[in-house]
Image 1 (cartoon, rainbow, N blue to C red):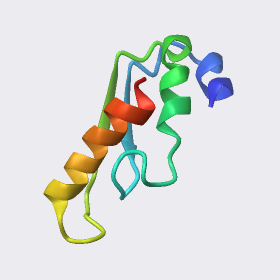
Image 2: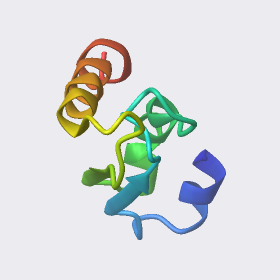
Image 3: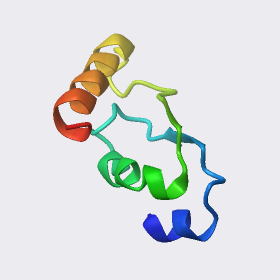
Length: 74
């Protein structure tokens, strides 16, 4: 991830990430992306979730918030 960011900074001021799962419950390593945010010049990270695996979008939002605040942004 860092290699991609170090070649063209600061062109990644906003990064849009889609995983089709709650943040921290899918395949994207959000902790690694956020660890390289200064190198990339990232100011904003937009997380999308287009679909809910279980058909319960509000549960997925809560899972994303919990994962961000207890596992990823700590």
